[in-house]
Length: 564
Image 1: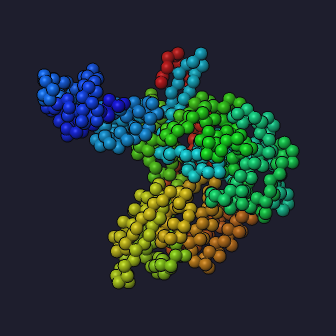
Image 2: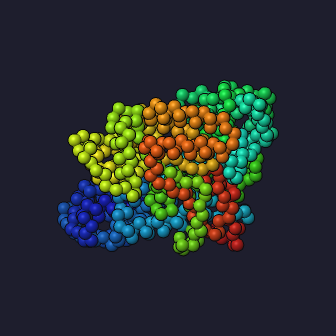
Image 3: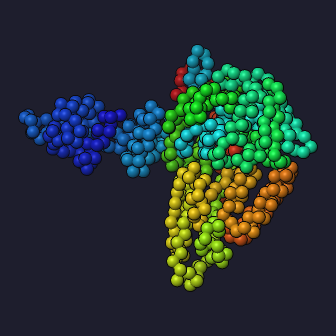
């Protein structure tokens, strides 16, 4: 790898010339080493047949150096070796530095198709199936309390379980760690009956005390997290016996049971088995079908948990690599971290089958009328929203010519492209814009209330109603008091409505009101998509629209030779 870098550095120094006259001392200066080490480097490159070196006698004499291979070929070799060693950081740096030509990008992308995807080998007469997946979001933690990203939630859903889960049918909730549950007439006292002999990955048996501990962590946290409006409504959690848990709510909330299906409500072992929270987030212990055996900044390796209480997964190993390479099938603008299962036996992406899950990503912008500024004027707000519509006509600017209006737009890095699009549209109509992109953690702070326009997203899956409740509760902080009071009233009604269809109607009322008053503008919505080969079997989706890895399988090998 180092020799590749030295070659590229050398060729770059001489501007891509194929033949140069140079001294060994000059080469030593370029490499940043001694005269003797420079000779070693030159000899190694000659052995690789990368260069031809015709020396001249005498120290200081100028010798002839000829480059025999193009820099692109060496750059590609370097990146491929880095990826094979899972040294993704160096691979990405190589791509940024050297992948300027379309031919190199196509070559690298084609090679990636052979590296990622399904790989099988026969060991002791057993087929060992490994699935390698690229993701476009960097993984930080799988601790249910601290996760922020969809990719983290995807991995977490294969490592942990909750008391209940979605069935795959719309609005249907089925048993998981709890085989049954009851709720009293007040809808505030919930009793869950746990399955017996469910094992955590470290071999300990799940008990009611683990549930008490897991929900207690949520109740006690001061961290602002998704769905906190739900778990802050829990008054207490009690272990009645090792297999029975009772949860008391402060007031009825019909979104409580759907919340228990989410990754946020996953059950962890009590006291995290002595680990601090940061260590647990990177090497978590759950009850799920896969266990985390390795995690670095760029890679996460899962291995099958053979004692999973709902049946062993078909895959033996899953290798997940952070690889923010912008390809058609992994484009981040869909909101997906990845949705591709590839197979190296494919010669062309045209052989892939494509299906849509029922999930989608919706991007939108909201106006902050709590800030003292131009957007408190409903007329101006309407003009600004009109600028963002595809069929918008030219907006007369006479009313604002004498006012130098500057609008601050805030978002997170994933949506910076959408924020820039908004800024460009508005600047074409005479408004000045300042885009601020901050981390998801900072975005939860005061930055939103200091901005005029806020770019959000909504992942629309089976948890959509939970996300909408959280979204509109947050949006109510940005809008005028009378509208805020109405929205909070509707949300109060929604939380007590047992019928999900009726809840959906109330959410639509809130959305229409926000759009009519120009507090909310939907930029676009895109469905999530999965591309896979016909050889992939068992493709199904979990509640978030992700491929459920527990059911994925591949036909057995027909020979004892490895296909890796």
